[in-house]
Length: 328
Picture 1: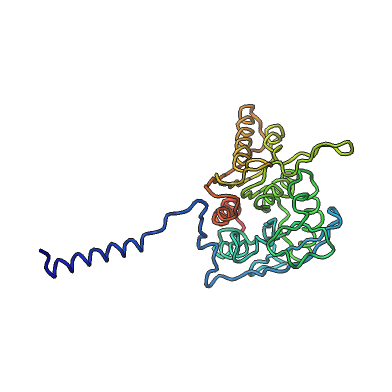
Picture 2: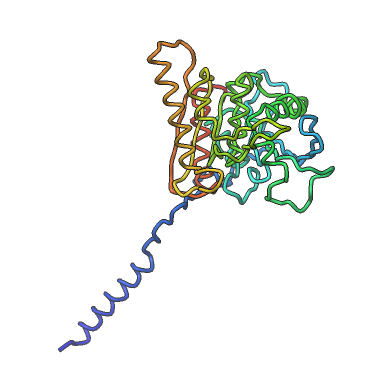
């Protein structure tokens, strides 16, 4: 027979169990990757200026207009003897979104303040849109000329970026001319675009951030009676194996639940890229080649076609990219 004391103890135990059940952490869902403190605004950290958006009409991509933003770090001095490094990100409308997955300006603020990376000018560029003025209603959506620019293996985008747009930025905000001080990055088709720029122009970019990269056949166009075949990004693994090694440092990120559709399988494609870099290095070692080697780091997760995992990794990616840079 239970007395009042026994009943009280039993009730207390039940309440305790309920409390523990309420406080138990929810199981992690696939693709969940929270931001670290380095991606959040921190008290006492000086903020750089995010200038723009500015409109730009390209001569390489005639008939298009795009927007771009320029991040200028706090305490930037145009006449300093040591010029800042350069970070270029595609899909600039999402890279600069303060509530998005990447939050690149905030990450730069924090890491520059920590002296974890050098002073850096950031340039964030949207794809082109086939119009005279950039549409006001696009928001975070993709402009209509994204695939022809980003998923092409030609040097068109590198010519636009290096010969047209960046010189305009450098007129007002000079940055280092050393390609070792330059990073180019992007997500999805923006990632393969970044890689293509460095592939064609290692004299300008040698560091590539590739998140959920679209190394698949989006850009493929079959041959017709009037036009030759246009290859897609799925050609890259073979090109890497059969071409001279470029002096490149590459970070690859993807997830096992990324897309699989008529263009290809994203996760398999990224694994093929990694395998080709590793084979090219091993083959060069076997042959005693004295040239450069690919420096590659990868992180695979369980995410889908989302910037979330890459965004959570971005602070550590930038630390790794600039770990040998002493201009802090």
